Length: 133
Image (cartoon, rainbow, N blue to C red; front, side, top):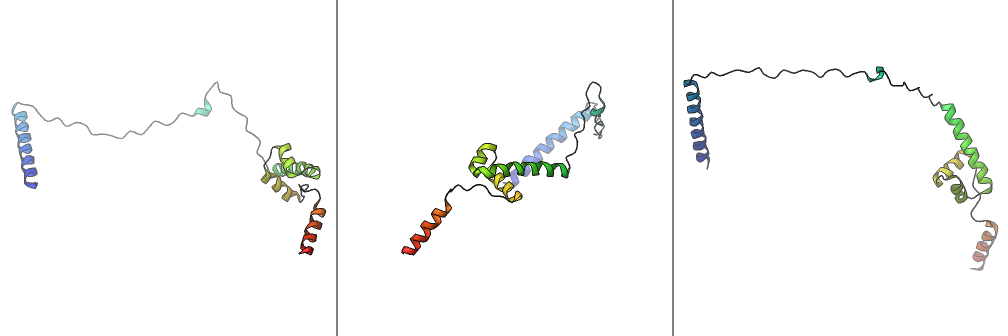
């Protein structure tokens, strides 16, 4: 198999040599062309200095104090809701998630109204059951 490959290649090489000889015998010459030369890209246009476009005003930076005041107002709002509502009712009223409500309660140090209205009655029933067994 290797021998066939070598034979085919040598035949092809002989054909190329014969074509080159015929080319030079007819009076033609080899022309050497210029090789590739690197040309860097043109620099980008400065789009900020174009005419006809309005310059946008820079937005004021949000400071820590602003964020703290907004968060404190939000927690106070949730605190007022927690005095009269359960967490589910507050979620429905504000459209916030339960985790947001619990986070605000933790930050503000308050608890929502319990879903179970009469915890005392339940605790009495539980102690009676344990006493009977």
